[in-house]
Amino acid sequence: VKTGFVSLVGAGPGDPELITLKGARAIEQAEVILYDRLINPRLLDLASPLATLVNVGKAPGECGRPRQETINALLVEYARRGRRVVRLKGGDPFVFGRGGEEMLALREAGIPYEVVPGISSSIAAAGAAGIPVTHRGLSNGFAVFTAQSAADEDSVPWAAAACCPTLVLLMGVEALRRVVDRLISNGKPGDTPVAVIERATWPEQRVVIGQLSEIIRKMSNINPPATIIIGEVVSLHPTASELSEMLLEYADQP
Ligand code: SAH
Image 1 (cartoon, rainbow, N blue to C red):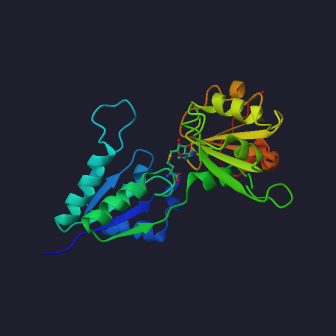
Image 2: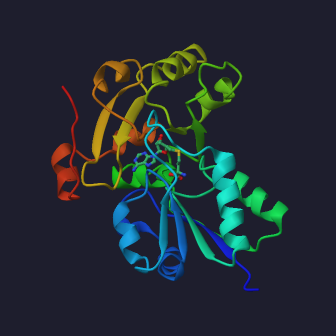
């Protein structure tokens, strides 16, 4: 019997050129591709016309979105049938991507697999907005958290987060008000610069810049997916016209 194989592949943040060569090759060679909502559909053009393409990431609220256990089971099942499977995930598979759960399911089932890292939006969003997350003299490190669980007081070590020179938040659009309150009550100055980057590296990329105390008001029309950067390094962001010279749209608000 032919043994199957699963590649957990990071698709990068959006721009289809930001996948790795290894990831692109895995797509080309795949017999089955299970892909997420946040990936650029143009990446699927690399697939063989014979490949089976399975959308496992319908928009939230849409019915019929498979649960994580179902996705894990599908990966195992296709591999047991001897298929070369690619699990294509936005950004990096292990950064808030539940790739770890998929890896454990494969390991438990004895399926051979590989992990092809991807460019995570937690790094790419800052880069695409011209914000150097560890600029010398301003920031000697950055931390990445999800803001999604901000309602749960203990989900993030807020006191530590407030001290971080550069804080990167994913899944934070809905929870940002909570995050701002927690950071300010843990001593983060209200005038700390903040950037909100929506759909980084996509043609629709938008960037909103403001201070921590005013960012909620300024980002009222930002939609997910967006990455939030908090820290002095944000002050190095390019002006609107400089950013448009980076060929990216920019929407700072008055
Ligand atoms: N594994 C992914 C993250 C998945 S969680 C990665 O490494 O990038 C989904 C969150 O990622 C979104 O809520 C958003 O915060 C962020 N995100 C994904 N794509 C993005 C993009 N193009 N621009 C900005 N943020 C993005």
